[in-house]
Image (cartoon, rainbow, N blue to C red):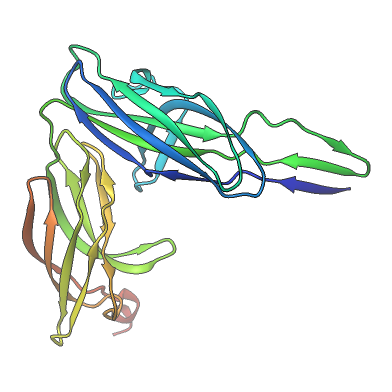
Amino acid sequence: FTPKVYSGFSLGISPVRWEAEGKPGDTLRNVVTLTSGTRTSQKVDISAGYWTLNEAGAPVFESHGTMPNSAASWVRFHPQEVTVYPRQRKTVRISIQIPDETPSGSYLVALFFQPPEAEQEGESGAATVFIRGRLALPIYVRVGNVRPDGKILEAAWKTFDGKGQLPALKVHNQGNAHLRMNGFFTARSSTSMKFEGIVPGLPLLPGQIRWIPLEFQGEKPPPGSELELTLHVDLGGGEGKVSMKVPPVVDNSKKDKL
């Protein structure tokens, strides 16, 4: 038999993340807008859970919020289920009640948007398979007097999936709040050619170390070449200027033949 696959779940979410801030006892509020991306109506169940970032910086979502920095139990939302019709927008109201006596720190929670449990349907001579999809809205909650404190440890050429070889910054967030180091840079090669680009605003959780790729705008230098970087980035205390070198990549295979 030939399986027939129906995914049929396509939603747009705005905002794509929420970076909330408050003190113990505060109630924080926001509104999420859901937009249909299909020509049929979609039933959506909404729930709260925990999320974090792995060593590569990819989000990992979990249904249960038992971690010490989980804010899953603080969240309330209405409605808990909704039907989104074609060319229609629906809103979901969210509130976060920060408990009294909550220690200062950075807390995480996610809202999950997914179709109800799929029911299998049989057809003559065929199998009908439903694909269960899920979208997530990551939420950062800063409580009390917390701030990020980023430190650039080194720069080097690194290979990234889907992006190839790029110069990158090894960054350590020594602070007690998540860091998002937006910025821009200029790079000069050994032949005095000038290149420009941006430092993407990728997040680092407290205590995390990860490589942040630099993204060129326009012409790119030869991969593996030596570069002089001038960075304008916010490492947690406002935008500042940082200068450093990206050493050239040594081809050991050629060296061994000499």
